[in-house]
Image (cartoon, rainbow, N blue to C red):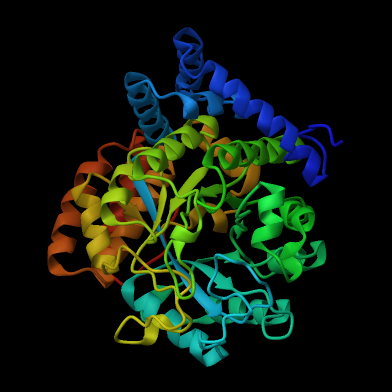
Length: 482
């Protein structure tokens, strides 16, 4: 029997079933132990060393105790600490992105995804390079600067060469004042050699959702195709890092398996990356199973309520304080608003989950991967974020300045966010306001920027940011960054 070892490179050892089950038992036994819960909360709280804010994070066992706890006042305390941590390391910035679906050809048999090979009534489509260009121009005309490209797994229709060609096309589109400055990649687990090619192509984060860490469920949910190989899929992030990609993004599809099991596995995966590579996940995503063509979420009996979903998000923020957290347009405006307070630092806006969806006037549904709950325009999402006290950020500076992996985490941990990310957010928001925003959003944004400039602690940085913002407003100069 496999023994738990976070430093192992074997999936069954760093995501160890016996350890997860022992963790869940431990959490259940301690979920009403107020003295112990208070000690965990004390450990999780941000604290100061000089001017720098620090967090200890939590082990998967400690975090699982908090997730199991059902004492109302302690849950409120978890939420409060999650918000403190979010503000300490990411401020009130929310990074904006959009998914771009390249192809829905897929050879896998995943039971929860409409792209599964046996679905014969969904039209199959793969973008040509001209269609990629057209989609990118449509996204640039909204104001997007950061994309996450998505494609089904199909070695014939979507080989790595196709993905690389698409990345090159995306970076090559310069339309009016628009540029895509960061391409994140969400494609199937692949080889070290292919990860090296993605790194050379200039990708940002490599994202791969585990779907479920419960091996037996994983095998049943992925009955056919290369994705059936649980170990190969689970060990993908180690191969990606071996291939030179130091920003990786984790996630599970909540609702496929028991959420407490998934949560423990997710935190263990983050601990494994930290133990082996010295840096944890750059991002953690929290998608939930949603309705889609040929997929009924009620077929999965582990769906989770909004309340549990909020608790999961907050507990992740306490356990892995420095990671970016992503919520997609799968979720409604109401759910997104609550979770933004509890640790989320990135949201998608005006997403279309169909292949070729951005160039069509009406939102197409025939090739959607899942239903989009939040169907507002990017301008509406930006305006809504500002109404709720957030700064919509289109910043990609760290990636392009080489502040990735442990270099980004060092910046985050040393409290330099207000002197770096904060002014970058304000400058990129100004670009959006000048080039793409409606009059009402623009007016609101300029007022917010004036208020937020005063929060930059370094006088020199503040004045440079103010000068750059005036240049953006009064000239065609773009892409200033710290």
